[in-house]
Image (spheres, rainbow, N blue to C red):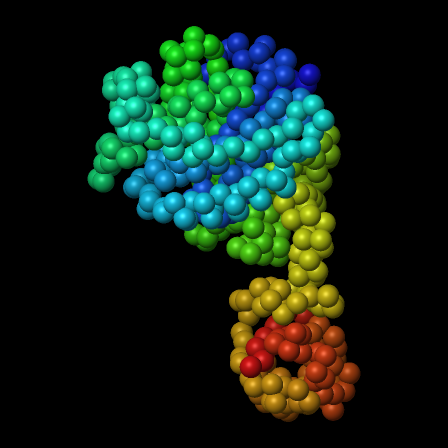
Length: 422
């Protein structure tokens, strides 16, 4: 079997292991699990770190289990949080679970001939506990001193808001997950971000106490960009894996805008591009950074992986439209997304359909006057949906109003104006 720990190190996906014996254990097939909190009905780009790690484990012949925290999601993991999460209802959690199940099904192989992936929900086993039985059967094996010594607990205890008992109990629930998966699936390894170290070691200790077995943990680094911003955040907005929340275009643009200082590391973490090709892209970046070959490869590979070839092609067409290429095949919703930051004006359909383009350019505000619009068209600098306006008498036809909702005007190479048709 391939050395999974060495692969994780090469791919910048390794932070720590709980035992030096683990690399030897992983020379044979093992069952590995990672948990995902259903705080949203879509996973985010930040979750992609864990997904990629699970994928590497599966490709190396290990069986992987993705745990959706239907029960722990009702509590909220305090790790890495400065304040308590807003508690979700059972209905919200169930809804979110469905979206996460769909997300994960794109990346993990559930039909693998020897090591098929599995998705489980911890609500299925934790729902059967009463509070008294959980305290007697699980809680008695935890020591307050150890729990209070966890980094995630200490940080919250020192904060202004402190920590509620609800959050404090989270590590007991996650620890029991490891015990249950050890019993039900012979799971021996849990993986998670470095902020999960305390929760992982709590589960390891519980399995040792109750089953006398040795299990292990692997943590991955919390990925930040070169400015120290947590990966997956863009101007305060999460980058989701669901196209209904983050469009193909916005997803692609998030990765194409990757800083030169980050792009090689991100290629290692978020793609399966070979190390040899990544080294070649690193040389190309050093020799001709303006060509942005590494960024293009990163954006294309991740978008294809998350959204498929059709999603990638839509993202590329949208990107092309932004830089003056043909808009055929794009929907109005996609154009509104691409040109969301350009000036726009709403006009009724009767003022757009059949309108002389140079008059429309002036009425919409692209040009200061009809005279300016006329001169612009005569000089070949006026465009309708990225097609050059051929004459001063050209009118807007109905089929040029995309989905009956949008017309895009352009002056020169980069000055756009959007008309939203009422």
